[in-house]
Amino acid sequence: NGNGTFKIFRVHNESNPANPSELKTGLDHEKASGIKTSNGSEENENRGQYKVPIGLRRSSRDIGMSHYARPERPPQLRYTPVEQTVSPGSPVSLKCSAIGSPAPAITWNRDHQPLMPSHRINFGSFQLHGEIISHMNLSDVTQHEGGIYTCTASNSVGSVSHSARINVFGPPFVRGMNNVTVKAGDNAYLWCPAGGFPRPTVTWLREGQRLPQGHRQTVHINGTLIVRNVQISDTGKYSCVVSIQGQTETSEAFLHILKPPEIDPFTINREKEEGDRLQLSCAVSKGDLPMTINWLKDGRHMQHDPMVEIKQTSDFTKALFFKSLKEHHAGSYTCEVANAAASVNHTAVLHIKLSPRWSVEPQSGTALVGSSMVLDCGAR
Image (cartoon, rainbow, N blue to C red; front, top):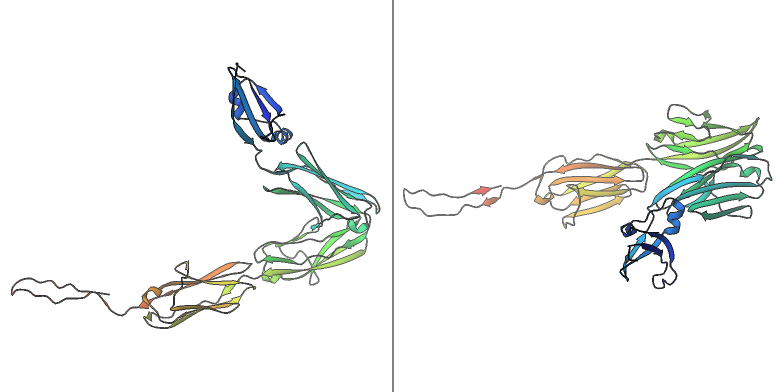
């Protein structure tokens, strides 16, 4: 109207704004460009497009259509599952809730294995005031469904998790463990998916020897074995022994360490001459397959050259064959090898002895007796 009052309407369908829902009325039309909300629920409800008509002196004009979108935020857990101790046959329900933008998805797993709906397990999820709430329900828990349950909230920005144990009265048990593969130098985590109650004692063995042995090994309070800065010598079978009041169960996992590649050093023994033939071979004596082997010249991938043939003679050998050395072949040659564990390289320098040649060839000339004469001559 004439005093500059503005109204903001949310229009879900711009082509049919017959019934816009009024969101905000104010006196200062300059504030129309900055719509703020005070909490997550208001942001969720107010998100959309806004059309701001302003009437001044009996005329109105549309000052534009803008889109209001909440800033992206990683998930935050509002409610997390708590530890429970129950008898077999009891119902169990775990709750987890989270906020974030975009709205996070919530998933569940047990002892690091995804949980899927079944006739015994069902999931419920709904949204309330911008908060995603998820329930996991077990109709009548069995003794072997005890373990560590984890709720994970994820969106395009990040993820966050929380775990809680469900203890079910009964004798000890341990589920089959997955083998673990890590790169040399990384940390290895071996989980022991044990259950039973009273809570079992977890012991780790390797080749009959109780762990930890040395400062690189740690057994966490939840039964997880951590091997730090793994080395090839850590490869082998690891046993998790679970016991309650004299009853024991055992499960095993194999720890495989990925070996980085190792190149046999190569050299170019002497200066070569133009026209010579030369073979440079890059042989990888150690390291897990598959691996890639590439040749570089002066730090760049080699260009096609009819005088140079690149041939992979095996899974772990790649050679350069120079049919006839030319001046432009001089430079540094690098063999670069990579596998899942690491990338390594080795370099050798090729020097080429060039035959003398004229850069400025002397020319015949004529001069008077007693006068000066200059003859240009240049060679390389």
